[in-house]
Length: 199
Image (tube, rainbow, N blue to C red; front, side, top):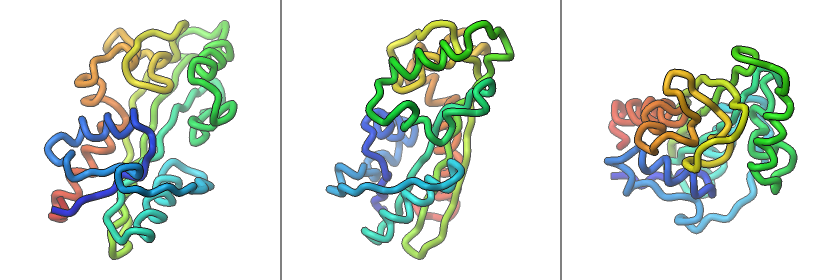
């Protein structure tokens, strides 16, 4: 079976990816595990473009099949910001506690649907022959009045999913992985790679 590299250094993300991909998780290595230290300029205009840039760069360095994701939070009242700049919103080294508080403050006075938001995840796979495959997943919610939940990472404590009556930060990893933007995009990618007999 081909080992694949997942182009991320985010430990929270790689943990989630391995949980979601379950039966093939032993064949996935992070950049750190692959001993790759590279600064990739993500200058795409969409989640898909950024995911492809990351996967392509690492595939060209290693000759291996590489998966990458680009994901973020779109807040409708903020003109879909932070969007593709989610990780860099308010500066890369700003804590998510500060970022989450800023988003909540930004929506002060807005209620219900006016607080609509979604997590978006695009996954790109770049194969050694240069073929590019992309999938996308989303999870709809609203921005909570206060951060809640210790699970997950990033913006999880402020995205409330009405259907489940909790934020993604309050969900168990099993529940979150089964309904999340990353879960949906990864399962769609896994299906395509299995159909192509690549995993």
